[in-house]
Amino acid sequence: MQAVHSIVRGNGLSRVYRTAHNQESNMPSVLVGPYLLRGQDGPFRRILREGGFEVIDPVGDFALTADQLRPYLPQIDALLAGGERMTPELLAAAPRLRSIARTGVGYDLIDVPAATTRKIAVSITPGTNHDSVAEQAFALILALARRVVHNDRVIHGGGWDRALVNSVRGKTIGFIGLGRIGKATAIRAHAFGMRILAHDAVVDAAFDRSYGVERADLETLLAQSDYVSLHLPLTAGVKGMVNRDFLARMKPGACLVNTARGGLVVEQDLADALKSGQLAGAGLDVLCDEPPRPGCPLLGLSNVVLSPHIAGTDIDSMAAMAEMAAQTIVDLYHNRWPGDCVVNPQVAEGWKWGPAAS
Image (cartoon, rainbow, N blue to C red):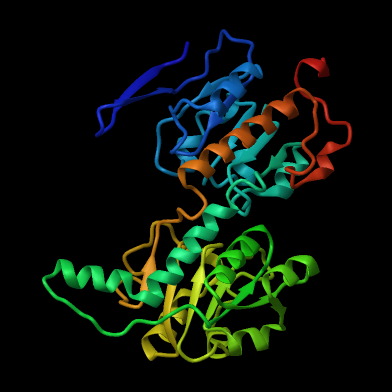
């Protein structure tokens, strides 16, 4: 039988966690990974239950560790995933697992080749959080330009600093990567009267005409941009691309904005560029270690604005991501292929799961 724990939060509400699979049930089970969804009601939970799944809400850290995941793995059929790192070892410990549905569009924490070998469909939720990320990216840009954090701290400390701040109108912003999130941020940059440069292998001429986007090679973008905004997935080819050489090629006094992945940046090199004055500031929603370790070279720098990897998860986007991820799991279980969501389409051939597979 399943054990149930009730944990009371500071607001007086309780979240109920099912921490063990009901061994007497023949229903397939799905483990809810994202902390913000565990024990919470919502359409995603109704979708899963009506789709035939028992929902398990584990107790654990904000991002479940390997040790916290391991007891559940032998009994789960699907994982509604957040920030869990799914290694080949953990996948091997989950013989029934058929679906890992990520709430978001990044999937670098999942060993996709290992999942593919085991015929596990790995899916994402495209089109659900790009506006949320864009809003956070622009919040960081405005915080840097208008010295929002600095002035807030000064006033709370009893001071009153009316030094001139920067504008964003008329400034140049360079996008490295212009997919859904990059485009959503570019739309906001256009509304603020910024000049827009973009470096991406895929060109959308209609979008470029509508929002005044100028395509540029990387050297030109770095040399001319007052703000460089990163919108790339973390792959081996771009890991650590923002290094000492990259930063030296940026326009002196420019700002770096990263709402993509912390691994794109060599943090010590960025800290050095910020301390030397080569860069005026950095707005970062992501870091190499999250939360950062005490020795992180970016901590304590007055020209760095940080947020805790929340760009893609506002109230509306979290609900949309959860619903799409849940629907993807249910569709796969009932042998309806959600082609736009699955990142390893190799597993589609001969796909069988759920009642219709028997």
